[in-house]
Length: 114
Image (cartoon, rainbow, N blue to C red; front, side):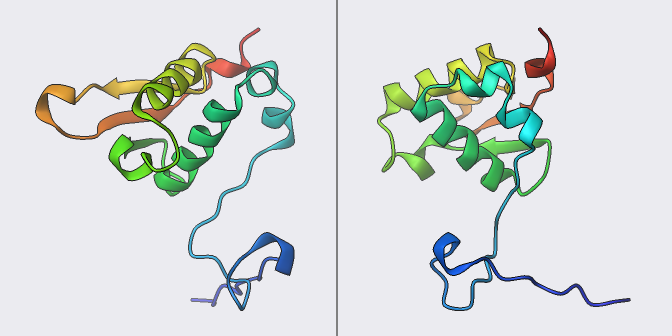
């Protein structure tokens, strides 16, 4: 099995000494230029990126507000989640509030629809 060469990030894009990140994600130019993405609030965009990192490339993932509450207040967090759902970027697969567990989300392709 061939070894995968790890390409370091440039110094301005990473805080690590060697430029090697454990987690990172990429965003396609067409998604970035989409109406859904361009119309997002700053907080919704921030949460979307945290979700992309947390999902580790999987379509369906759990995402807990507790982990990110130092970045946003609870009402702001849930407002951002609602915005992402309304714009077609995510779907709430499972609400787990009554179980005191993190909700299950999935990335959606609804943002592609006009």
